[in-house]
Amino acid sequence: MSAAPAIAAPAPVKPEGHTLPVVVICVLIVLAWYVAAIPMNWVVTGPKAEAAGGGLANLLLFSWNEARPVIPAPHQIAVELWKSVFMVKPWMPKSLLFHGWVTLSSTLLGFVLGSLLGVVLAIAIVHLRFLAKSLMPWIIASQTIPILAIAPMLIVVLGSLGFTGLLPKSLISMYLCFFPVTIGMVKGLTSPETMQLDLMRTYNASRSQVLWKLRFPASVPFLFTSLKVAVAIALTGAIVGELPTGAVAGIGARLLQGSYYGQTVQIWAALFMGSFIAAGLVWLVGVAERLILKRMGARP
Amino acid sequence: MTEARFTGILYPALFGLAVLFVWQAVVVGFGVPAVLLPAPSDIAAKFAASLPLLWADFVQTVIRAVIPGWFIGSMAGFLTAILCDRIPFLRRGLLPLGNLVAALPIVGVAPIMVMWFGFDWQSKVAMVVVMTFFPMLVNAVAGLEASGHLERDLMRSYGASWWQTLVKLRLPAAMPFVFNALKINSTLAMIGAIVAEFFGTPIVGMGFRISTEVGRLGLDMVWAEIAVAAITGSAFYGLLVFMERRVTFWHPSYRT
Image (tube, rainbow over all chains, first blue to last red; front, side, top):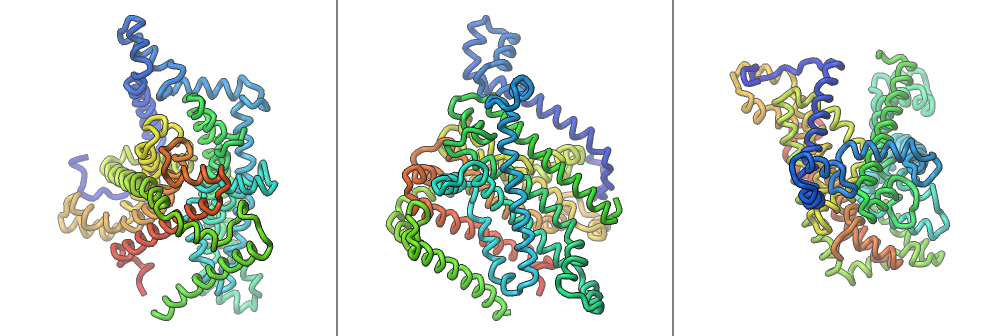
């Protein structure tokens, strides 16, 4: 690298050029994890390993198989995931699939509601000038309130109003969701150039025709970029919404139980489950994006 | 310009006042019980009455946890981005992972951080660091690639070294991206610190106060904390916008 030209030209990134580095880095992370588990678990496992006669083999054995470790070894998490996903019936409260589904359902409801609200707000803001001036700053300000932090309060208040179960959690997801969608859609709906708008005017197109035939198709790429952000943040909202005591099901409740009872492996397994759901949702939105853009005639 | 700026403040201010007015009118008019939704006047009274308590919570959560964590996390992400820029292999490996992690529900590591670093502010700082690292990494890497071919070729024709190119061309060009990440991180840092307090804290802090007051149905106090959080968040954000204008005054979006 030292002899390389002073300014590295940004080489066109080939899709296949990512696999090897990603795999190498993942392997390095797992290795570092195993190594880090030895000193981090020393508090718990050190005495046990010494009582068993000491030596490296005993140390490794105890560090990587401790039942209540400070940091569990990756294979322990994998085993816990396997046990709680495949070895338990999916409708039992012990199954991670059950908790995952609870979280997923409120995520999806919140995502749909939030995206609709976001699109409607964006259309209103683009068409009504006074809304653009008065509402936009408040929409931005609404996101500086750490809504995730007050989510448990909303859950409790809504619960005392008689809204329990799915809806309160979904409302939190919705509140988080609408923002990226509104911002992206305002950008997208205003992305047609003056030339194109003028063309629509020469056709004597009405405002709704301009919206449906020009503005909306132009905004679809922006919409999907926002939806990817929105679906990830909706899941986070649903998980935090499950944190207040009383929630008995869902990834968030699982995290909380694990933290109460010191079940580290359970926390990590729930965390990984949440991550898989997030990655899956973002991937699904990406697939929908490719399909729809292809149908609209975008070049692949 | 001044007129546009004036209306830019006037319209949102009027809108906000209207919302407050309707809120007050609905609560008083329909007799909504205070355990559901306190009136803005009650919240203001509570706010004024419990200033020392709010200040203690503010110090614990914002001064001790949010700001150090935000600074360390953003700095670490930024330095890693420069390292990635120096070692392309690292960039190609770390960037897809960073993009993935940015989509994950990172707030979930809060119980682990509390377990590792204890109940006090250290675990909150760690939480904020974890939350702010990846947005900065992803944005800064994108920003370091933002300078154009022509400009880089110009630097090369000057015989500029990698460091000179970095400091004089590519870092300034990356600043809009860096500020974008700093703004995202300012919100994430508040969320991270407050959520981490739900999993264990000494008996002070905004997250602790919110969760205990909810339990006691003292919603006026909860709303006072929310007001503190909103004011802090908006001020934090506004400060960053101000700094961004000063640093990236050359950017097309600020040209008149």
